[in-house]
Image (cartoon, rainbow, N blue to C red; front, side, top):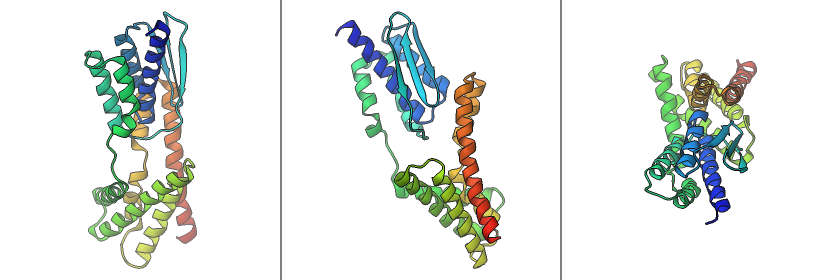
Length: 251
């Protein structure tokens, strides 16, 4: 392999690893560290990387090669982050070559295990009713919160899948949660609308994004940390507006 193709392979591999981690919710400092370690173990000890929430830059001081990779999707999938870290460690230990690392990163979206949609919806219901009770709710609201939490998460999931409009999924899900909580209390299926809403919106709250934004800011990555925090604030605002409209219309 020529030196030019080798450098291009190293760049592609580093950027692919960084993009997977960024799209899966990893912190910026972790992404930069992984990219630099892969480059160093591939023989490029003077690599330069710059990561933001929407793009990754990678270059080598020893050459004129610099490349940009866009990040268009962001979610939370820590399994993918762990797999990329594991592959980078195997490459550092010489267990796999740079070609094998590139190939396995290409297939990571298919190899990483994902939970079925019904299981995700069921888990959202369990989280909703459990947290409702932990936050001071009563058993009277347990079943209603479980069902409304599942319905709210389903609305968010399928709205995002069908329309792909950012923040609309959280708004609609919150509105449906608030409306169903109002109906449950009105028809005496539950006792406290506040407890139901607090529990049912928990699967929608961007807790991991908020935590990562503060970790990025504390690590000195002010741009990425601020971008993540802004996105999390908009998500929280969408949820709040959806609930507020229900209270305005029906309470």
